[in-house]
Image: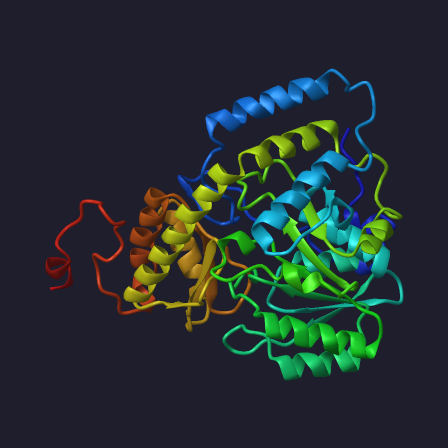
Length: 395
């Protein structure tokens, strides 16, 4: 039976009125490059191992899962120790249903009414949305024209607003920009100079970065948190498994707000299977990094401006004409290619796909952006692909 009520007629919280839920378009097109998913399906040996692990877990589904996910946290700690350049114990790791739930739990524990979170926008929009959902005040900090964090302006914002939580996203979404170690240290020190402040470094895309993880910065900094996900590098967006590393006291704090038995036995079993195949999955990451760099080179050769990216996506533009940004997005869609319009004026974002998907995107973007830019032709094929002679194409 359908309801006669509209959302506005319900007694929702005032700060939620007139808002829209988070989400990217899910359209049935041939090339979907709008949600930063890993385009490679899980390898068959891993699929079989997941089936085995889940079958084992299924025998005990009449019982609640391990509430503290000790085995999973132990394996995540081993992964971080091996790849992050810093020893991590399972007591320092917490896992939840996607990095979004991790961030929500952190704001439930350290934000809330009368408290404030600060982030540097444009950045991952869920930071501000989760802040609103937890009734935490939100402050948008400054970025430079090139989308890097202005340290002095950021220090001033921290001193002025005295936030309880500071978000630093590296690599940043949607720009792909990495944040260097010195910047994170400077912002952490500025935050602690005001009052004890949680500094959350969102490293959802760090496996795609040219640089190293900021994980070693945890040493001696109990108010620092490094957040991760298995959605991107592990190609497990459908799993919904996020985690963080921090001082054990931070893990204790989020357990005060987590729901009982929040990670299902099936989720834990699937994540453990994926961690057994880390080397294979990180091999796909190397492919995607090479493809990302090919896309950057090709877009710049076509005359487009591209933000340097350390992620599995690329921000490109710059479309100066009023409405040009959305017009190019629509023209790409008309060519069967879906990219993301994040609302950053003059820019669009494209996820890195398979070589074939990336080539289809580059061919489509030449046609879609042609009216806005003077671009050469014939520069978009992947290495080894058959293509017309470039000199002939450019003549």
